Amino acid sequence: MKKVTLVSLLGMAVLASCVSKKKYVALEGDLSNTKSMLTKTQVEKEELETKVSKIEARVAEYNEKINSLQEINDSQFSSVADVAVMSNNTKQKMRATLAKIDPSELAKAKTMEDSMNLAISYNLKKSISDEDDDVIVDINKTVVMINISDKLLFNSGSYKVSSKANNILAKLAEVINSEPSMEVMVEGHTDSKTINTAMFQDNWDLSVKRATSIVRILQDKYNVDPANLIAAGRSSYLPLVENDSKDNMAKNRRTRIVIIPNLDKFFALLDAESL
Image 1 (spheres, rainbow, N blue to C red):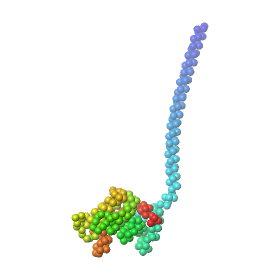
Image 2 (cartoon, one colour):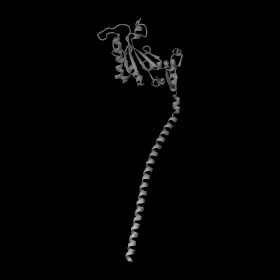
Image 3 (cartoon, one colour):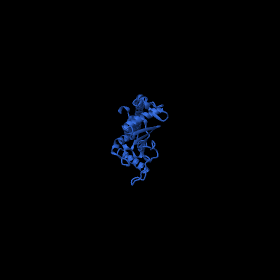
Image 4 (tube, rainbow, N blue to C red):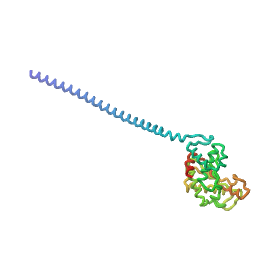
């Protein structure tokens, strides 16, 4: 009887042990699942936080754009005779410049394009040199052509740039460097008097050497990008006036700088209030 009871007790103990182990395994599985779910939830939370941060950044960007609408409104662009685009701020500066121009010259402006050309010519000329008779600025559409008398740049019959040219070339370089994307052509022009020396074969030689002398100084001394510079010699074949007098021949001996400006940047540089 005692043996039966003992066997029964041992059987019950073994059975209880099996049941406890099953519960343990089940609980362990639940714990593992719970940990996996927590990890997944954490990853999803971090992804959600990243998305929220991106959305907040975009909202901040849009708010910044909205807050700058007034600024943008002040710089709304309009076309000028289909040849240029100017902001309202630029127009205001242009009007301030036009107020300083001789009324007789201003009367010649029949269109907005004419007025724009007058304003650019006036500001550019004043910024480069006070020598009114020796610097001529012409505008063709948005191409600016600056004719500088050789007496401001060279000694007679020489291609060596005079030291008195430093001021005008420094100011010219400042204008050119204000818009690094534009190309600048430097043209040498002579009068019709022929030249033939050990240094120069003819006027072609002289005009080319003078152009390259200016280009080298703009590059080496005033840091103008050489990739945007073009040197050209035109000899005596594009005179401003007839070579029929000493004064006219002096006018034809010149260096012409041809540049294509961005008008807003030009007026920012040549602000009428700073003249």
